[in-house]
Length: 161
Image (cartoon, rainbow, N blue to C red; front, side):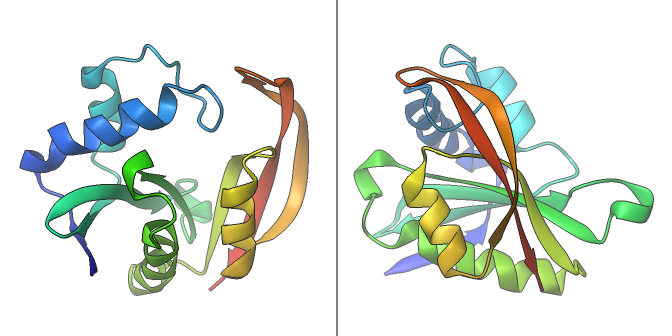
């Protein structure tokens, strides 16, 4: 069974292992594949974020965060990021985190969620977001230097809560 809980400091090494494996391919996130543990955990666990981990059979297999997309008069729009361990792909972890993040975003007072940068070729993620109510509201040409595909577009996706 997949359990999602608020992340704690002691979860950082496990979260780093997920981040490291996800960014190593250079195909879904903007972070350089050679990013360090220190810079990535500082980014992922920064103070403005609500960070969560997903556990499957007691092992951390996913992580996500929620935060305001913008400060001040834009702070009612949430933003989020999700990563799933390659070992847990296809086991429903991403969907469970997506569904929980919508509930959590409402609980935190957000009126909508916007993803600023979803790599177009990341079809699994795009389909997942669409299946939980996100719409593509824009496309940024040549926004991502994909490790295999070269210059690739990115979507801006949105969901009202």
